[in-house]
Image (cartoon, rainbow, N blue to C red; front, top):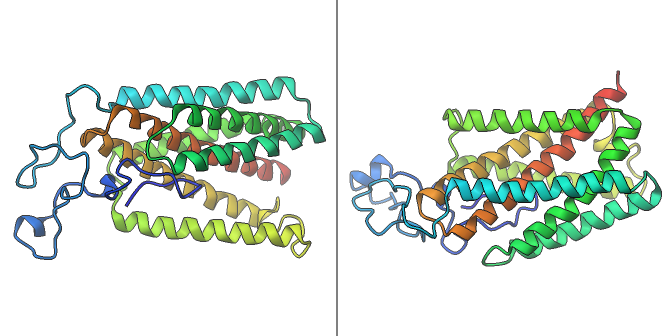
Length: 286
């Protein structure tokens, strides 16, 4: 399987041969000759040639391979681009119907660029940074709009996003969450169902069948939906962490760090937008 994200189509490090992230150390059944247990390294394109007898992979020392420093650097570049775009949009675009239209347009362009990258066999830094720039413009405009009505909401949303991300990383590193194929299948099923329900809700609202935003209202129901969305964001983060960890362990090419940065940026944007809405809901009910 492969890691995924809100668009559900971002390709993982092992695009053609399955997701390396869930083909970790061999199970006992394999070591004991279980005929139904599969060698977890059989189809892994990044497994080292010296992996024998089920020995776990070691992080490669060879140059040209992805390292954690590469992931951190690329992630800083993409998230920095998002931040710069957001600050410029906030500072230069006053709250108006025009800026709202620009925000929607930027979101559409960002989505298109993300989809193009998702179907590319290799990461294209220009596409990823372009996605980050347009996403930043979108976030800057909507953040200013929320701040106009709920003062301080963007700052609280940033803190909330950092808290969720930090807590998820802590739980993941502590081993309290094991990212397995079953875990991913269940999570993805819930995520897809969530997106489908939200799409139907959007159509019902657009045609006037559902009032006040339907499931995305600013009431208790909307808060519950927002919390579910944030939990899904945390789920996506665990998949991203696993993908990065195994990409490094199996010797993924250095340029794959851009895919890691791309995935993390998409997930953090997802969490921030949902957190911004949740803060607004709680502020409205004060």
